[in-house]
Length: 78
Image 1 (cartoon, rainbow, N blue to C red):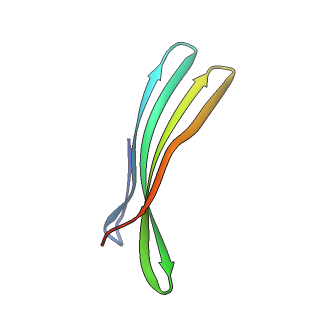
Image 2 (image 1 turned 45 degrees about the vertical axis):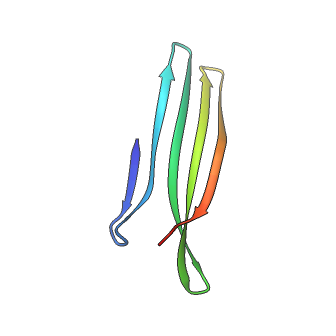
């Protein structure tokens, strides 16, 4: 898990969790991340929230594969 906080604006910037399943020569993980992306449009401060789900598969020592399976972006209320 990870968490990022902005002390100046007093708000969360990003957080996420990841579940990893390991075997001898391969591993699989699924993760969820939420990002707060601030923006300045026409002198007005807005922010968007990104929700992202990733799937990862590693076959050691051959290769790894990562795929973003879901991304949703929406305007933040307030």
